[in-house]
Amino acid sequence: TESKYRRHGGNLTTRSTELESAVTGSSLTAVLLASTTVKKSIALSSESRKELAKQAKVTKEERRAQIDGRHKYLISRLADGMDLSEQQVEEAIISDDKFHLIEQFFSPRGLKKLLFFYQDVLPQKLNASLRSDGSTNSLPQKKLFITTGSTEDFTGTCAFFLRTSDEVITASNVSQEVNFGMFDCPNGNILQGLEFFLSQIMIPALKSQQNWGAVKEGLKNSQIQDFLYSVDKFVHTLSSSRQNIEDKIQLSKVDIDIYVSNLQNPSDYITAGEKFPHQSKHNG
Image (cartoon, rainbow, N blue to C red; front, side):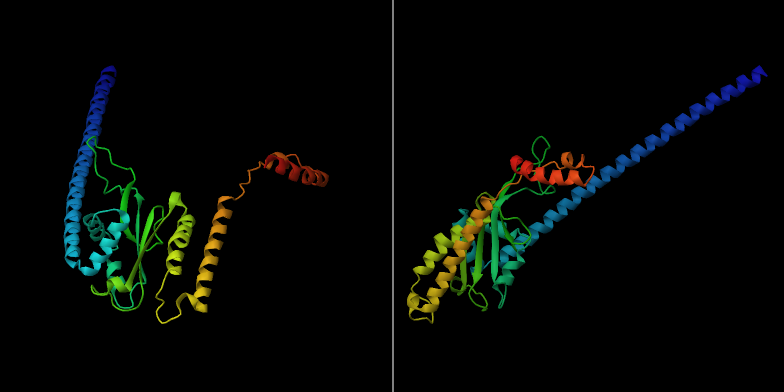
C-alpha cells in the first residue's frame, strides 16, 4: 500500500510539473503573440502616419497651385496685420482643414465673412513633435487658422474679411469688394476688444468718411447722423455691460447644513428664518 501511495505521489509530482510547464508555456506563447501584435500595430501606425503625411503634402501642393491674386490679397493683409511673413501665412492657409471656406467666400453670393484667429493653441497629441528625450511638446504655440467663429474659443486676435456685395470676387475687384479688419481679445475679454475696435477705429473712420455713395450730403444727411448716433449708443451700451460684468458681486457660499440640521419644529424654522439672513449678510 505504501509503495502504491509513493508511486501515486510520484505521478502527482510529475503531473504538477507538467501542468506548470504547460501553463508557463501558454503564458509565454500569449506574451509572444501580444508582443508580435503590438509590433505589427506600431508598424501599421507608423505606415499610416507616413501615408497621412504623404496625402497632406499632396493636398498642400494642390492648394498652393490654386493660389491667385485673390488669395495673395488676403495673405498680404494678414501678414501685415499679424506681423508675419507672407510665406508663413500662405503655409498656414494651405495646411488648414477649412481651406474650402476661402473659395466659398470668393463665390458669387458666397459667404459674407471670412474669419481668422491668431492665438495660442495646444498642439494635437497625434501631431505633437517628439523631443530628444521622447516626450511630446504640449506647450501652447501661436497659430493662424481659419474659423467659423463658433467652434473655437476666441482668446487672441481675430482678423476678418467682409464682402460688400454679392458679386463674384476676382483678382481685379478683390480690393474694392472686400473689407479687412482686426480686433484683439485681451486676456480673454472679447467685449473689451470689441469696444476698443468700435470706439477707437470704426467710429473715427466713419466720422471722417467723405464718400457715402449715393448720399451726396455725406455727414450732413439726417440718416447718416442717425446711423452714427446708433453706433455711438451701441458702444456706450457695450461699455456699460462690460463694466457691469467686471464689477459683478461675488456671493460667498454658505454651508446651510449647520442651520437645517438642528431644526425640529415650526418654531425652529421661524427662528432660523430671522437669524439666517443676518448671518448670511454677515458672512457675505
